[in-house]
Length: 387
Image 1 (cartoon, helix red, strand yellow):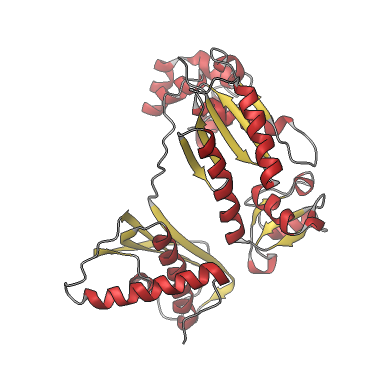
Image 2: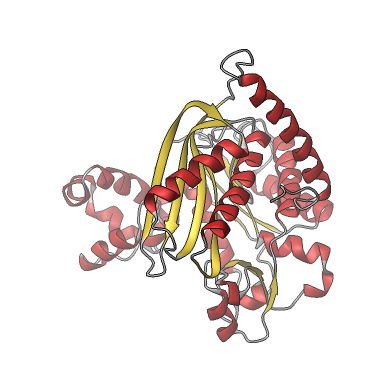
């Protein structure tokens, strides 16, 4: 039996959640993100704003030039996480194989369900809208690649200033026909460089790419050419994987004005490290490698990393390591535009309470657990580290 994969994408998720908390935003051009004077970027924007040319990842200053009446809304991270959790619970109630790939996107294997695929998608769409008041678009196809492209195609076809709430179904055996007229940029594995090279060869549509053949594409693009040939025909054998492995956790910030003060930079690193530590503990993870990211005013970006003897999820350990890395990479008084902290090499925390002063670490961990509970309930600013 062919597989049936459902792909769900919450429409303008951050904006939809903000409208739940502030209904006066409905129908207005607004964007979720940072302030323009703080070099903020657009994280998400409403469909009326999109109609004016505003797009995600665009500098907020540019968005305001395109749409002077644009309303700017600050991130509400806790709100988004809670609503995402409720959506994913409904997907897990629908079928056992669910692969969440981002806060607002997931695949579901519905192969074993007896109802028609379109009926399943429509019912799920209606359930999420009625119970959570969140609009979503759905693509259904025999594999993950085509299901995701079906969602994107449906959203693009739903022109207007309202949420698309598209539902697109591609039947088994129709994958290549469905993909043929679409631009090659919609295929996984086709980035800007590959797209430019294909255009040089006169290839702009997926159907044209499919006609080239695997051997020719392998000679042009190496092993990636094999994937391009298969994807152009709508072939994708990857299963829906319930556990999505977290490879790293990081936080970064861009300063409103370049910062050269050593103390302010160290303070920022400690705040970022606290966010990373809290995320690690929330996911019951610890990491061996601490990474530092720095961007100078001329946009030159560098990264440095240090591997610890044992994995950690403690804010102080992460912060202290990152500060040492910064002191080695940066001259005193050197200006910084962006700074970030990350932890990789993730796994379950190691608890060795009796070894090498680990009792002190355990005390710190219990204190952090108590603080995490307070911050989760009352907000990040309810308790803060003293100077």
